[in-house]
Length: 460
Image (cartoon, helix red, strand yellow):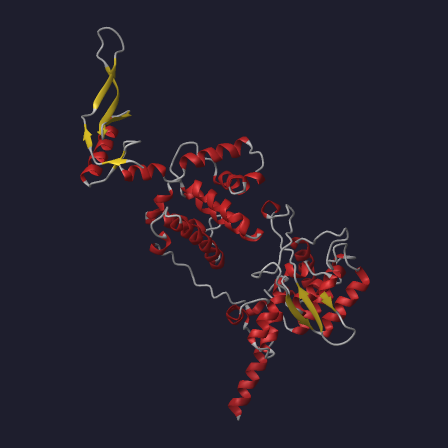
């Protein structure tokens, strides 16, 4: 950018237009004139107040010693402000930059967070679409790579045009009021009720990363989140011990699963057993293949986990299907994890393979047509099985409310059985710090044992 400090200002020129013979000319605009170097510049405004304000800004920049750009005639600070991206444009660019490096669930969380924040970082321009329409425009169009965007409906196209015009500049986040407004949007659900602390913290982490990226690109001087405090109850991340089943309850549940439907339950029983006896995540169990299983006729077996089938909306997956084909969570694509499994699970898997076989791709757990089982489908089976296995009071409690709670129960059982944390963490696919923070909990039914040990000690 070529600049000059040689600046000269002229008075504001009033522009008039005659409306007819004998009538006083009507003022139509006001022009600010100045020179930078040897080049004359001008800018015209509808009202005198706007012209005076603009001229005042120019004079102030000159008095403070700013260089003026020869091309635009503006001081450096104004050129920077003029060229600055809006929050909307930056958010779109951020998503497109990070999309190739993120898993489908990460992409979904990223776009969900930005769709919460973007509507509040706007100016009050006329024609604002409904918030629901704005969020749909962001999630289903703007925050998708260009080759994945559908043809927008007229409603979505209008919302995108409004966002492009109304979005605040990214630099507006230097003001605490805008950053606070964004955080408050993340702290609420769409119905206006407070979001869970874990949800807020997860979304805040995404927002923090976006702003750190802006700092890295030197579009923000510092991360404005560091100056804004929004108090939310601290979340320890620990599991609710009321959700953790003991071995007897787990076996009752696994048996009850086989009572659900003619084939749905029996085909899923071994999948749930993998979550309890092997501590597998649902996506790991969904991707389990026959070749991953070493199932001897007696003794312990071994699962060598390599692939997972995480579920997300198909617009976020690489495959364009609802389930992606990925490596293990938090590990490189070719890294495997070996999980020893007890004889009880070995027998269950051998029986499952004898009865249902494996699909064309080798997967053990699938629908009757060979497809992947959706999360909603196996959750429905689980919900029904709980009514068979539990008393009404237990069924109404958090006890094993979700299939994922079987994994919680498995890891809690290992730790309470005396398995060293590094070994338990390796089997579960966690870091030791996460293991000790989240899973070191007593399983259901152990309180009475602990109470008796205390009584015995007191009586000694």
